[in-house]
Amino acid sequence: MKRIALFFALMVFAAGLHAQQQRTEIYVDPMLNEVLTEAQINDLRVNNPAQLVRENCQLVHYCYFASKLTEEEGTYQMKGDLRNYVKTGKTCDYQAIISRGCINRYDYNLEQDPVKQNVYRLGNTGTYIIVLSKQNFERNQDAYLKQYGLQ
Image 1 (cartoon, rainbow, N blue to C red):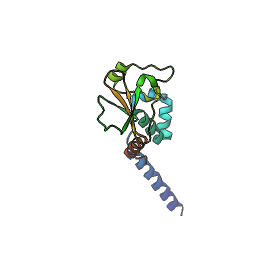
Image 2: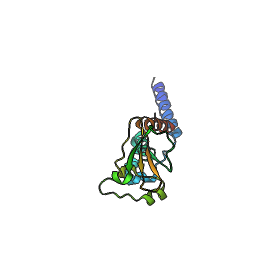
Image 3: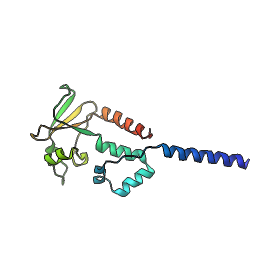
Image 4: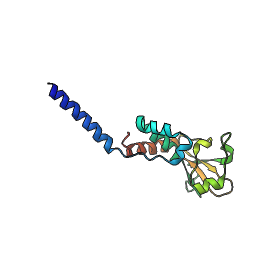
């Protein structure tokens, strides 16, 4: 009886090891270090990888750049100049944002509509920040979690 129980325990342990080996290493955008410490990131990587993926997705896939509005009018809402949405103590340098190719959304009060995309203008640069609708973002986040086997 002890041998059967030991065999079963070893099988469960081996299956757990195999499942961990199959999991893809989670890519963490370097910009996440501006929001979380390295210790927090490592803690999430070990203890709550799904939350790490969500945090990364919130930073990387919440909004995107566009040089023109290709969406049909009525499917988005113009929110005005990005400078009007900078959080206290943060700065908004359009050229730095454009050259970097991304934006740390935690430096801004960017609104997310349940259905429509919100569009923020970067001054007169001809560039826009487009915040995905909540339903589109959640669909993308679910796909991102599935990619890592976390949903």
